[in-house]
Image (cartoon, rainbow, N blue to C red; front, side, top):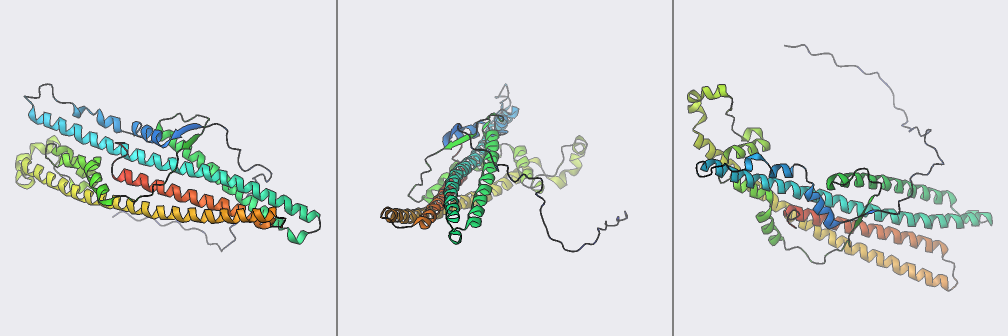
Length: 380
């Protein structure tokens, strides 16, 4: 038995304040550069198409050499059947990769739209708070210091700048990721601009029809159905091993083991029997995947429905804030002093618009999940 090495001993210490060191960060430097004036126009449809075209490994599966039939198919019927099964299975696997790639790219597309929209709302809020700060400074100079919460306003400005800086970094991350997914130039100086009407559909999804469509068209399910026919037992065995190594056959293809195959035959069984067992296990995997697909489609449809109600609530909230802002402007026109309330209402409106944008993006993300769960992104 190998000796167990002694565990290292760390020194003992007491609790101490956790204080970050920001002495190297210049206090007067701008937190982030201004946003550029030109962008690369990108629609959701183009995002899906480019993601499908650039899905990793999908083209390699389509061009796999085992997909090619033998030169004399009449004399190699088994090889011909295997090549056809290989072409179908690998083709469905390639489409599954494309479907997933499109779903992931569209998810980032809508996240980018949300980030850009939120950035503009934060910039508008920054403008309003700076105007509020200017009024407070004027009040202080006029001797009304008790009516000007200058430190509080400056904290708001710094908080907005921090949020903008984080959004700016997130936008850069999403641009880099989308360029890689869509096969675009990584060093392009122009960022992507996601263009989409962001329209929320008013109707609920027909869940049963969506489930039926998904079970029919999902590429991963169709690949399993081909393997369940029994024309490619070795390929089916490889799939089972990818799910769990113990699901596949454990008999080795090593030539030394093959030399002793007659002796081991009573223990390993006949090849036909092992192929039938492999096919039966694939059928079991297919049933499990069908149940999983059913659940994924139903969950995405339920999420879409809930997000649509959230959009309706956020839209109503925004209308109420707009109505209050209009009323305050009328009172200001009538000569009443509502400056503080007016600034607060403007900021509330910007926040309500941001909440509505977030709710709309969440609805679109749920719709992308539904289309991906149905296997439709690669077919649209």
